[in-house]
Length: 227
Image: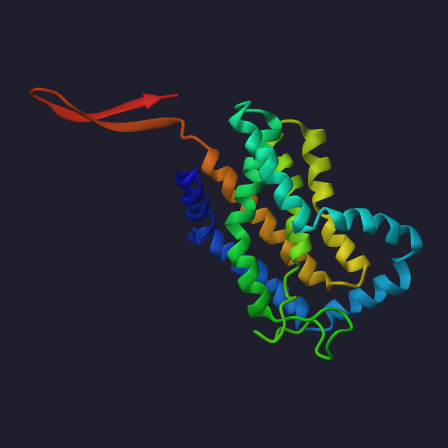
């Protein structure tokens, strides 16, 4: 388990992924520190939000409740101790690892961005480092991980894969619908979930070949094993 977590962190904090994350947060900064966030929020609240969207949002928000989802994934992962390679157990292990992998970044970036919720502060979504802690939606992150994990697990099943990807956006959407987060904040929460799950599954990918040193009485060299 320790080796897997170390590998997850190595993948998540790799130079390529950090560069990609920098671009993602850069786009988020443009949206948050301009009129775009407020305009989207006002348009959605005035034009789209209804009693029906509120009812559906109440369900979608539940998937982003860490007090429920984190224990559920840990409990699901423990099934592997009794039934190795159980789909539920594997899902629980991967999802738990994804939570653990990105949690430090989530908590840090919530404070670094310092954005506020709609209607809470007069500076709105603008980034004010360490003033507030709502610049990245924790609900969106928590709610996306379980479904993104399913999408990766069933990558060869197109129906399940795309349904899971679609479902991964629901909690992020619910935060915008409920006027609890701006669009950039919800999107960044989802994005962190995507990168963390992707990093975990990168750890599971095996090379098509392996190389190992060989030593004989009068020789030495390398052996290559193709899989």
